[in-house]
Length: 93
Picture 1: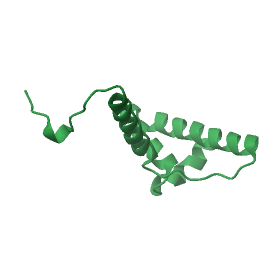
Picture 2: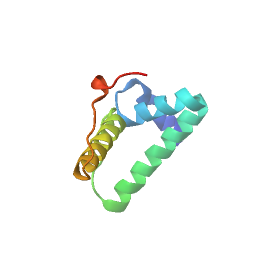
Picture 3: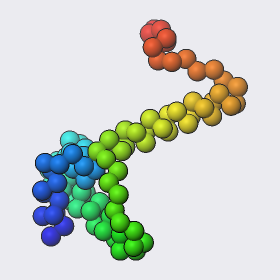
């Protein structure tokens, strides 16, 4: 039943749809559906557990999270005294 609930999300630009597309690219259609159904059930469980409404994170949530992680690493290296070179200034060998 959860897999059937995931199918209509493929036409939307939301977190569950982007999750399904990402998994489907690597592992196939059925695993993408099952993984998205698992995500949907996890979201439903957390809504019931906490009582808070669901807030859509957006389809590019993971890309933003990765970018923030990289920026935090750069800031950490700067605090330790290292200098970082932007990718545009690096020379290819």
